[in-house]
Length: 481
Image (cartoon, rainbow, N blue to C red; front, side):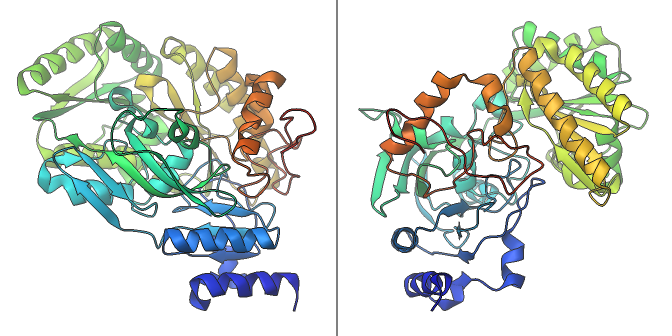
């Protein structure tokens, strides 16, 4: 029996033959996520419980096979790509909401619970789960934890780490541990915070205790339409400078508007260079005052139109356009390469102008979608992967945009993680001492190359080469991970 056959047999002994995939036609479904990278695993296993995850980890460890944890595959940095082969542990069968504590406002869920399904499950209690990535109808809590996902409403409510109280995890030796708990404060080191955003490199999350929030008394969504992108960008800084922190400030440029209208018919006006979606929530009187103030600020920047949606159906339609933009870009080009970087809000006008220059210089359209309130850019480079020159240029553009973000004092990622996509730029933001300190976490968790190898740390290869060697980072005398 071959080594791979022995591994598959051991995995089948843990989860059953029906939940271990190893035929080429099955594996190809798992060779990609929402990014542009590809990597074929040797096997895919679908555990249904913490005990099965532990058994899978032990089996893989015996055979020296790395494990790539995977949620719904909606990630946008290559984090769920098995670019070195090994075993993909897809956690999409672990979909139970195990506990809802209405009085203390928390829930305990398995990692395969879809983000929006959690809100639907608790809305009858007047509660909701705040982090809302654009893919919230499909993405899972486990993946959100791994990438520290954000979303439109992270401006006021924060990203995933601000809503995770505790985690049950399986470590590289197959043992099970709880990090944090069910309350806001836990004594000792914040290992929960270490695992959130670690992109599956330190442990596999099997349960999460998450905060629930009360539904606000009132919600209003304001649509501000601008002829020029620069005016919309300046309006964002104007709103924040006025001391207003709405629940969300989202921006879409003309390409995004066109795609969304063709797909969703959200009611965005034609002929606009950009639109802002500004959402305000809270007590009814405070919401009315804040919406009036946002409108007064926006009027300083020459808007074509401002309208306020208070009806739930109209609000849902406006947000459907925003959250459906990425899928709708397929109407404009066969492929898009979405870049995730964050800059100071005050540099929005400058950076978006330079992105337009890059688009004009290279000939590839760039659709700009932003969590504008916190400066989180999502430029999408439109291209056709069947044209090798276009594919290569799209990746080069992505790199130039990331370098631009760092140049103006920003960071490499707002919510998508480093994964494969950004690892060659990691050293532009962190020096050797920084990376050495971070790399020491893997020996502390005794992970080695067991979980998601070759991610985050620079590997010395371009992101064009998806079959790059494992990342290595110095982690103390004689220790390499």
